[in-house]
View 1 (tube, rainbow, N blue to C red):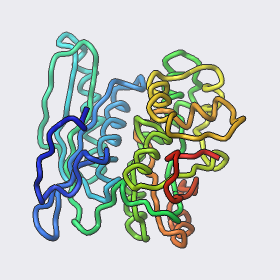
View 2 (view 1 turned 45 degrees about the vertical axis):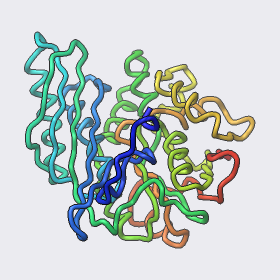
View 3 (view 1 turned 90 degrees about the vertical axis):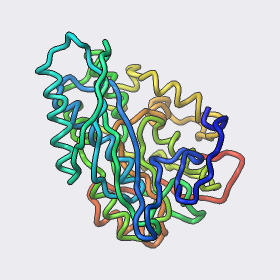
View 4 (view 1 turned 45 degrees about the horizontal axis):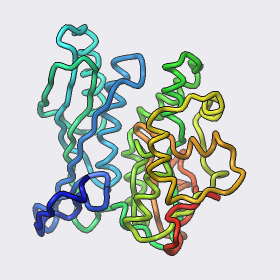
Length: 314
């Protein structure tokens, strides 16, 4: 749909929607640019405070993925007019405290009456125009490092079906609550070329966007991918979110997956993530230093010259 919209040329737009990047970037001065993003969604956990905090972490993530520092946020709320106001207060409080943890401030927001609860933020950040990281920066020969485990979508679906254990839900929740601030800071300390956060399109979907934008091929080592506790088991038991099926339809035709790979692993590679980690393309020599300095980070693939299939899973 975006491809059908008229392009508006502006020399200050450093990153627009052409490459499906995580956020837009607008240059203010030769030393300062704005990073702008917006994200909101329906509840994925039972506790309202935790839902609000996860929504905030997820919204902030797009700024970190661009190498930016979030400075302000506007809340977006859809809530039933006759809903429990104590629940709404907890959602807002959870979001506000996570925004504050990021060193960001809430300036206001907008709310509407809606039978289905939705919550999130429009976030503005700052970045130096020469230090922007986009999904179009990956280069053939780069290593690919990822900073979180996969499986939040499958685990959230298992929770809704009543088959997820408390321990597995807790581990997934802790992952979603973790800000990508430390990952961003570590990424900026090495020779990183490109980055994207792994969210709704899943690992393969966002890797495909990186490959297309960078005009390269992305190779993922399935054996290296780390999954959240319980994710493989729930995928085997059929806890498949609707977004996962959509992701397979979107990215499957441009992805080559090794024959014989277990179906539960294939599904998790397409699993839509909430507040997922950063996928970083960086100089091969810098990968060990990034991994050593960032707990939880690990190598999961490499960047190759362009080929017929933009993503290959081996």
